[in-house]
Image (cartoon, rainbow, N blue to C red):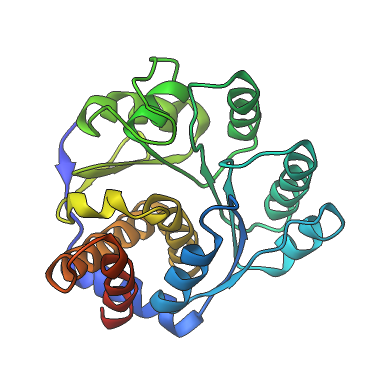
Length: 256
């Protein structure tokens, strides 16, 4: 299967659509990354909302333009609220992103991810070890960190996309986006981004924002990855360590 690249005109159009729409993204994400997730969305031109109460999640998912479900810090109550939000998003035709954080290491987490996969996420965004794990190919992951290359998970990503009728984004040194037929490769970025908590999780919510504003989920996902990699390159040039990298990364997103 040949690999494609995202044309610069398509990237610019996708970014412009996000900033014109300023989509409201319903973020059901983990406790560690809420602040960077909100700041990434704001810098990119979208609007974040962290609504996690079971009494509210389903209703709010119908009002937002997109939904992010990140399983990083699960509780039974949160899983139930996530389920309500997913079902509501599906009923109202809203795109949603599944981020299977830490998949492959814990039975409870893996069971939740397996269930949510059957609920037809628009995009599944994970690192290589997570994508390998949820595809049944094992994982060499270390907690939430990947010890596998994105290239090694590409076949698993294609298989997942075909099996569940979704778009799969496997991120790493090169990001790959596939719907099972097309593969778009996104290069660039910097390894220093892995030293800042939340760059991967916040990318998933950036994908959700792009899905809300763009019709083709493959293009939307590739554009979000491109934006993140360009911002990381900017941060690499304008920082001296992980702390200043985080600030420069947010600046880089806003300047694109």
